[in-house]
Every structure is written in C-alpha cells, then in structure tokens.
Amino acid sequence: MSWLKLRSPNILTGVCLKPLGCIRNYSQKIDKTPKLLTPIGLSNSPLDSSDKSKQSKLTASQRQDKILREMRGSIVQDISEVQEKNGKLFYAPPRVFKKEASLWMYNFEGKSLSSEKVNLYKKCQGRPSVLLLFVNSYGENQCKQWIQNLDKITEFPVFFFNVQSNIMKYFLTRLFSGSIKSSLPSKESWNNYVISLNKRLRYPEIQWNNRLVGNVFLLDESCKIRWAGTGFPTNEELKEFHAACKYLQSQSSKV
Image (cartoon, rainbow, N blue to C red; front, top):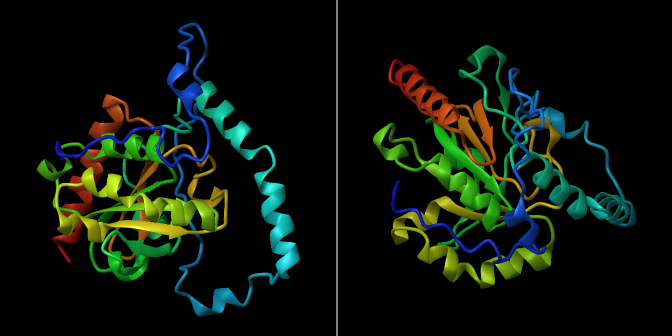
C-alpha cells in the first residue's frame, strides 16, 4: 500500500517525542530484544459470557486510584524503553502460531472516521485480517511500514485502531481527525480506521506494554492471534509477515 502517508510524529502524541528522533545507535551494545516464540492473547474469548463473572468489580474511586498508579512514571518509562530498544520490544515469530494453540485478541470498540460504531469481533470474525494497534502518530507510522505493498501479497482487510486511554485525548483525536483522513486513500478506507477509548495503559496478554510503540497482529477468522510484530519491521520480519499472510490465506481458502 504505497499510498499510505506517514503523519507528523508531533500530532496528538500527548507527550514530547523529540527524544524518539534522537535515538543513538550503539553498535557495540548487545541486542537483548527477545523473539516472540509462544502464542499471546487472552485464554478465553471476550465473547464468552461466563468469563465476565470472573472479573473483579471496582468502585469509581478504586478505578481512579488504579489508573493514577499506572500513569505515574509510565510516560517517562515508555520513552526510556523506546530509546533503549529503538522502538523494538520483541522480534516477530518466524512462523504463524498453530490454530489449536493460538489465543484471542481483545474485543476493542470505538468509532470509525465515518462515525460508525465498531466492534472488533463483529468487524473481523469470519475472515482473516490484519490489526494495527497504536496510540500516536509515531506508533501509527511504525504500523504503516509493516503494511506497505501488503495488497500485493494478500487481500486481507487492514484495521487501524487508535486506542486512547483518557477521554480528553480521545476527543482531541476525533477533533483533529482531518489530518488522519488526509493520510488515507479514500472515504471507503475511513470505515477501517477506528478511534477507541480504553482506560487500560498496559496490555501484557498481547505484549502491548509500551503505549508509544505500534503493534501489528495477524488474526484468523475467529479473531485468534496467529502472528504478531512490533515497532519498525526488519527486512527479515517483513518476509516472515508476508509468509504468514500467504499461509493463513491458503488455509482459509480450504474452509
């Protein structure tokens, strides 16, 4: 998809990302970035009603305290981690996860740029798809590099989920959605760009623990995570991503 435009990294980030453009390359430093080798995701489908009863209920003040605790130092920590690891938190798996071992994606909800209410599972179930998760233009630009020329590999739909953690950032993102629309090729693609509000700051089950970094997921027809990537892709990771898409496409065509 060569038409994808990269947006300015200073738009709607909520933090100063100047340090992100000044990351130094220490050639002598040992790369300790892990490779993702085991399935990630939720052990139960978000659509499983029996799982909802297991969730603990918090009062409004408890929820507020929990959010404040998570926010303290989180931005500084995220920036420091991005600088240290050059925006790469893990390397993508060499091949797709087996279907029987794969785990489920979160059921994110939000509004598309066409003002349509979107439920991830309703949108994606029934066919394989590519999901991009990010919070700001820095993470979005990372995700876009994964899907450059993806239309030559597969016809899987690509869904952009811009996930904001507080109501102010959510409304600011919607207010300035014009710049987002201008980076997309047509009004038809606005339906696949969703602005979501979710107060969680960390998603350890899907290895999205740094809100400055964008993550890419390959989902099957059940919304199970069959492959995942993060940060800017390496050439080897792009080959693995394309191979994963081709494999999933061949499997879905047999159904």
